[in-house]
Amino acid sequence: MHVYVTKTGLDQIRDFRTMFLHENHFQFVCNKCHDYGWADTWLFRIDNVRVGYGSVWGTDRRQDRDTIFEFFLLPDYRKHASTVFGHFRAACKAIWIEAQSNDIFLSTMLYRFCENSFAEAILFEDHFQTSIEIPGAVFRKRAESDPMDGDDSEYVVEMGGEIVASGGLMLNYNIPYADIYMHTKEQYRERGYATYIVQELKRMAYKMGRVPAARCNIGNRISQNTLEKAGFRVCGFRLKGAIRLVEE
Image (cartoon, rainbow, N blue to C red; front, top):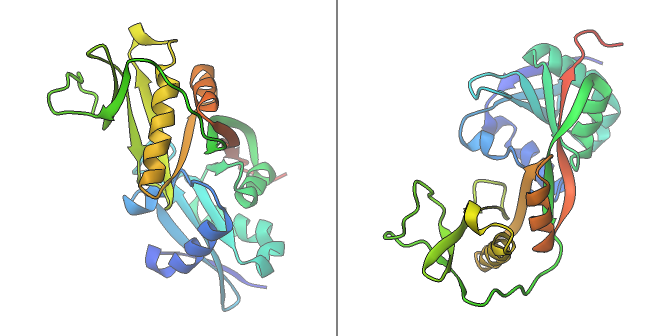
């Protein structure tokens, strides 16, 4: 068996990416890397057959290509995954793997090839709808006249004429997902505004034909609690590991 790994363009592996996204029914955090030109792609062949692809980007600097974040093989060739991955790592010279734990295939490679792996972020999916109400609170689109102090969020929560929270939907992820973000002004925290704006942003996502998703840093317990109160649940983790230089 001969394994060939060649650097290629996105169009040459787009069919494989379609299968990858179809197989994994979740928001793929790094999807935008392809759209923005932050990633390189590599095509895998076994003998003369196209069998899959991999993608790399920069873990700290976007111009670097030191981190594998996608790895896909057709099901019939997954028995050769470790061999193909070894050739891929040697060709692209990556030193890190970043994987979502709900991407079982790449996560397997992370645990197989890496040391000192750890979770960077928590990933959330929508679980149930809430009906939180805060008397006097108004959820609306930001107006040009709103004093936002550099905050470019599209939506706000207003209370008594004051903007107390802001947030929005990031749509640069794989369709149909929309990533929710929010911020509450410090003096208005612990009053339920963050949970309320997340609830309303979820509703906006569905009105747009999108499926809401979210994530937060692994140690951010406040954001985690907020997202769960608004009907999200944990669906995975963002993992990172250093590839062993010499395989044991």
